[in-house]
Length: 338
Image (cartoon, rainbow, N blue to C red):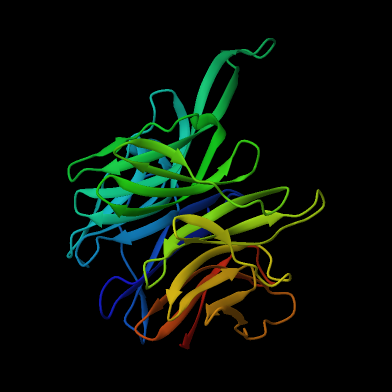
């Protein structure tokens, strides 16, 4: 993501083998780029595991940024960290009282006192002793959508209607107390929710297939809202591209190339957006799609993409590789001029 006029952040997770054990450790991974080189950013240490799942800076202020991740027992809640222009500080986001786990997946920072994050919480329904297993317990649980708001002082939870049947993966702040959230419902149907001072509203979406999900919401350089994700056309379908655009207050489907597959994220580029899938980069401009070629990958090396960023005339796509000699992934980035 673009942080300022000369800085870009790339984030994710580092996976390491615990010496002398089959166990692995997952720790937050953040890089800062200046257009020429990338350097790893040192983050506060903590006991436990987490990824970085999203990052954002307050609009117009590169010295006010956030990263978010997973629930960490030692922190007593969900890992979030704040950048004040000189250092990072851990700020824990709360989970519901009956949650046994959770995490945040998307982040949008409109102002210093108006930051939104969405994700999930695993809620304990019951916990009973397991017959025949001394000390053992049987846990029954379910997953709820989780929405958190930073008011300048602390993270506060915002209740979601029918949270047990809502799965959220993306959030975009449009204005004060005015946000769009994307994901899918309990029937695996694409879902876009609008939250403002009047409450929650579910957006009417075009029928795109049997099932599907929205993975990312956002705006292009003209302020037009887009959504990307996956649609399933039949019971055996592994996924086709889902692209929606809001025109005149209505969400319309934008047909995508049949071979594109699911699309994880996108970035605003001149004339529209550029979006990425597992091994696909598509650019929308002048009313049509163009597939951007990718370099070849050596045989036996796994390769995938998960995000894109356009900044100052440069497009960067991010993902990972899995070398044939190991089962531990490595970060991967490609850059080209727009």
